[in-house]
Length: 247
Image 1 (cartoon, rainbow, N blue to C red):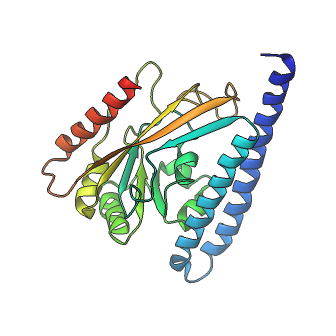
Image 2 (tube, rainbow, N blue to C red; image 1 turned 120 degrees about the vertical axis):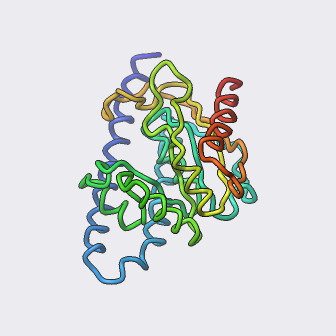
C-alpha cells in the first residue's frame, strides 16, 4: 500500500470515529432530556427508527469513504417479515451498528456497562433496549417486548469472538426468549476480510482498511414447540458453525 493511501485511511478512519462519537453524544443528550419528560414509553419506536436511520447513514459513510464495504445476502423483505429473535456471531465491535442499520424495529440486549455509558445509555434506554444483568426477569421482559411486535438482536456468544476460534460457545438465553415469545430464531453469519476491532483490541485502534464485510441470513429455526433450550442452542450452534467453516 502506498504512503498516500496509508495516510488517507489513517485520517479517514479517525474522522469516521469522530463523526460517530459526535453524533452519538448529540443523540444521547437529546434522549437524556426525553427521559425526563412524561410519556417516554410512547417515543421508543421513534428513537429506534432514528437509530436505524443513523446507523444506515454510518454504513453509507463508510462505503463512500472506501473504508468498509458491506455485502448483504438473504435480506429480502420476506425473510425479514414479522418479529423474530436474530442471533449472530460477533467478530468485531462494529457488528451491532451494521445489523441495526438493516433489521427493522429491533431492540438489543447490552452489557450493563453500556447502559451506564454517558455516550450511549440514555439513547439505549429510550429505544427500549435491555440490560443483560436481570437474569430470569430479563428473559420475561424481553420476550414480552418481542410479543408486542419488536424483533430482538442478540449475540449469544456473550462477547466478541475470541482470537483463534470461529465461534465461542453460545448461551441459551436467546432460545428461552424465542420459545416464550413463540417467534422464530433467524441466524446471521458475519465474515470480514480483516479484524474490525476484535476482542482485546482497543476501540480507538484503526483497523486495516479497506475492509469487506459479508453478512448472510442463513435461515430460521422454529422455536415453537422447542422442549429444551440446550438442544435448540445446539442446533443453532451446528448451523452457524457449519456455515462459518464452509465460508
